[in-house]
Every structure is written in structure tokens, then in C-alpha cells.
Amino acid sequence: MNELDGNAMAGDLLEVFAADATSARFTCAGCGHADALATLRMWGPAPGRVGRCPHCEDVVLRVVRAPDRIFLDLRGAVRLEFSVSGS
Image 1: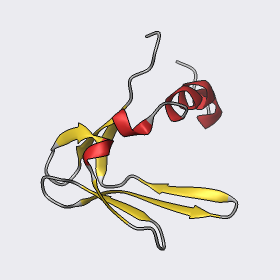
Image 2 (image 1 turned 90 degrees about the vertical axis):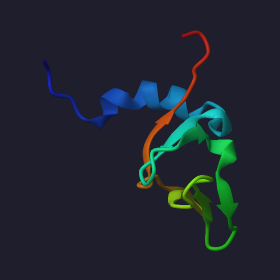
Image 3 (image 1 turned 90 degrees about the horizontal axis):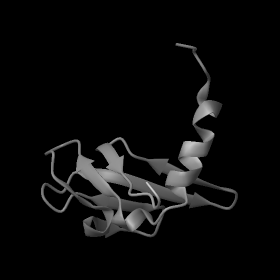
Image 4 (image 1 turned 45 degrees about the vertical axis):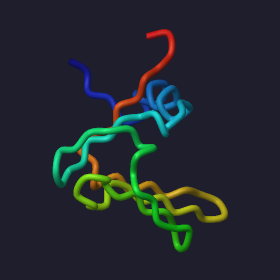
């Protein structure tokens, strides 16, 4: 196997992050509950949005928007699962 840097994932990540994220499924790191991102209990907007698990109320994700960037913290999710068309 050849070792590559993170640029090798650019095409895959572009396809994922161009998808509708509300239908993506998360798995909560706290309790293992899995559901669509649209089911998260959201708090916000300032200083950012916080999405909590509807089952255990642990923080699953945080989104903070700055003038020139977006910060995405997913440490409360074991994974995000996106459906992609054509696959």
C-alpha cells in the first residue's frame, strides 16, 4: 500500500459535503443512538449551533460560522453516514 496525504480524500469529501446533511445518519458517541441529523435537538445561534442527541442529550456536533470560515466539531459523533446518489 502507498501512503498518501489527506489530499487523496478530496474527491470523496467533496461528494459527501455536497450532499444534504440533514438526511445523514449520526451515531452518538455517548449512548450509541443512531438517527438522522434532522432529529438532533438544536440550540443556537450564538456563538454557534449545538446539536444534542435526542436520546441522551449529549452534544453530537457544533457548528460555528465566522465571516470567512465554518468550524465543525463532530467529537460527539462516532460517525456520520451519508447516502450518495448513483452509488
